[in-house]
Length: 206
Image 1 (spheres, rainbow, N blue to C red):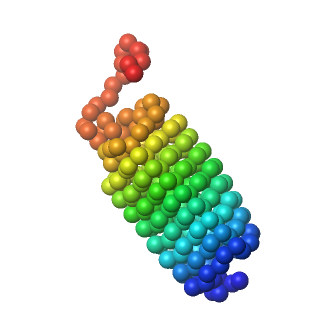
Image 2: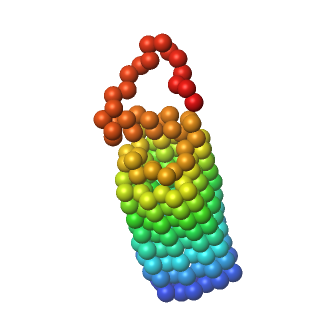
Image 3: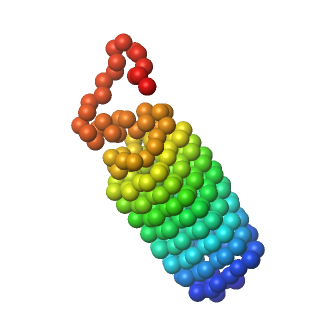
């Protein structure tokens, strides 16, 4: 099917592995139990699409712009989302292992029961997003933005949060000790606290 034929279409139990939708504009596409492994959709635009039970493993979605799209029970393992935008997206029961998603924007998104493991999300933007039961495991979140984030049962384990901004919006989140250490300079800057070297060289008490 051409991208034009996909607009307004409903597809279920379909194999679309390796589909090429580069630069395509797709509106109101409804996919259920569809495989889109290794699909190439970089630089395109998706609006008001709903994907349920879709396998996007290895897909290249770099530079993709989406608005008001939903992903439910969807796999993004090893997908490339660098520079993609998910404005007002709704992700539920999404798993993503090993994604490359530097500069991803999830502004005003709603994520529920999402797990990201081993992902690279440098300078990702989660401003004004809502997260419920979201887990970040061993993710690079260097210089990520969290201003206005509403977090409920969100956890970070083995993640790098150095240079993150809006860290006061992580109120209610759970951070492993190493994660808390990486975000401490940003938090101190927000609170107007000046950090200095400990002349004794001793480690902080836990």
